[in-house]
Length: 28
Image 1 (tube, rainbow, N blue to C red):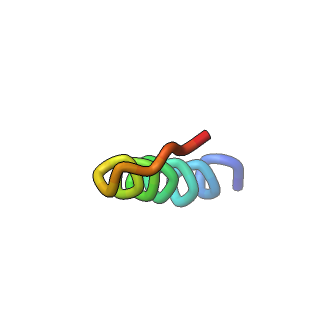
Image 2 (image 1 turned 90 degrees about the vertical axis):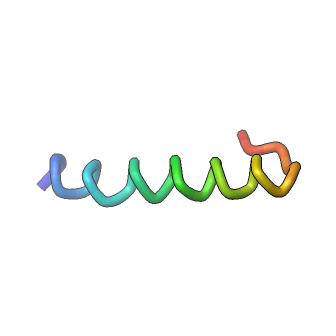
């Protein structure tokens, strides 16, 4: 269960943070 959540949440977080950083926004 935990591995499933991590495999879904972590990639999406890194993708979103990379996307926002690409737009020039700061991400926590």
